[in-house]
Image (tube, rainbow, N blue to C red; front, top):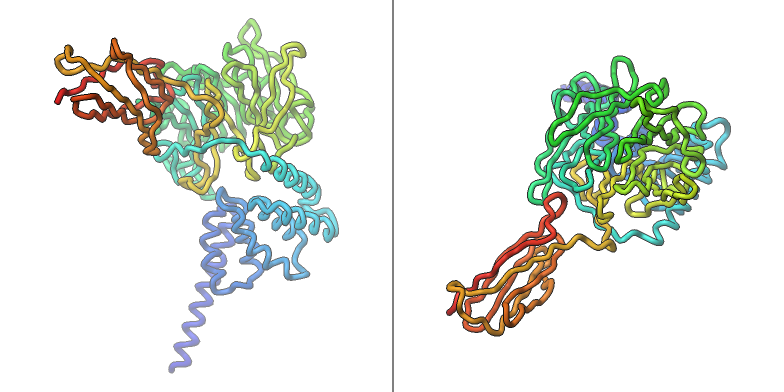
Length: 512
C-alpha cells in the first residue's frame, strides 16, 4: 500500500512539474520575461543542471530592466558543456558587459567569434560589443561628478516610468508610465503606456496624474516624446494596436490644459517608424528620429523647417557628423537651442544607446563636435532621453539603479560642479519692542540634511541689517546676542519653479 501511495505521489509531482514547465516556457516565448524568471527560479531548484532552465532563465534576466548580471552564473555553468550552442558565449559576454566586467566580456565575445560555424544571429554584433567594452573602460576613467536623485513615490512606481520632459522653469514634469490603469495587460505582461504629469509646489513634484483622456486612451499606447523649452508644445507618439503603426502628433499646452492631438504631416509621418521629436523654442524647426530609407543606417535624425503656410518642409538628414551606420534617437535641444542632446548606438557608446551632445556651429550652420556625455549617466544599459534644465545644473533621465522603485525610474541628475542658483536673504535684527540695542550678535546657518554648519554671519553693527546667500535646501538659522534668548528658526530655500532670487525676513529676538 505504501508503494502505491509513493507511486501516485511521484506521478502527481511529475505532472505538476510538467505543467509548471509548460507555464514557464509559455511566458518565455511570449516575452513575459519577469513572469518567466519567477517560474524558472522555482523549477531550477529541483533541477540545477537542467540546460533549458539555465539558458531560458539567463536570457530572461538579459531581457528585463533589472540586474542583468544575474545571468552570469547560469551562463558560466552552460559553457562548461563543449556541445553548447556558440551563442551562449555571446550571451555570457553580454552578461559580463552589463556587470561591468569588461575584460571578461571581451574574452567571451572573442570566444564566440572563434567557435562560430556559420551565419549566427549575433555574429555581426559581437565586434561592436567588443568596441563598446573598450569605450566603457576609457569613459569610466573620467567619471562625471554627479548625484542621482530618484524622484520618489510621487513620480515613480514598480512599473516602467520613463522619458521625462521638463520646461525651462521646471514647473512641471511630463513622463510615460506602463503602470496598471484601466488598460488591458499585454501578452508580454506589460501594460500600454500612458502620459503622466506632475506640477511643482514649494519646490517639490506632487503626486503624478494621468493627463487628459483627449490624449490617453484605453485602446492605444501613448508616449510623450518631445517638448519645447517653454513647455507650451509637446510631441506625442501614438501606437495604434489595431493598425500596428506609430505616428507623431503635436499637442498645445496651456497651463494645465492640453489640446487635442494634431497629426504631423506626411513629411514627418511616413510609412517608416518615427520614434521621437523635439521642437525649437520658436516652433520653426522640428528634429525627429526615423528609420526611413535613404539614411546612413538604422534610425537617423532629421530636420524639418516650418513653412509660411504652416506645413513642414521636406526632411533634411542631419548628416554623418550626427548620424552613423547604427541607430540615433531622441533629439533634445538645450533651452538656448545651442546644444543638441541625442542618443546613439554609434560614436563612442559604452553599450547600446548612449547620450551624446553636439554644439551648434554658427559659421557652418550645423551641429558639430559630437561628445559622449559621460559615465555614470551613460552605462552599458540603453540610455535614451535626456533633458537639461535652464541652469544646466540638472538633467532628467530614466534609468535602472539599485535604489530604484522597480524597472525604469525617473531621476533628476545634479551636476555638482555647476554652480546652483542662490537666494539672497536679507532683513533686520531687532527686539520685540524694536528699540533695544543689540550687541555681540552671532548668526550661524546649519544645513539640516547634513547637520553641518553652512556658514557664520554678522549683521551691520549700526543698522543690524544682515545678508545671507543660500542655495536650495533646508536650513536652520541660529542667532545669539548679548542678554537675549537664543533663537532657532528653520528656513527652506525652494528650487525648480518655486525658486526666489530674494527673500526679505526680519529676525526678532527676545530680551532676557
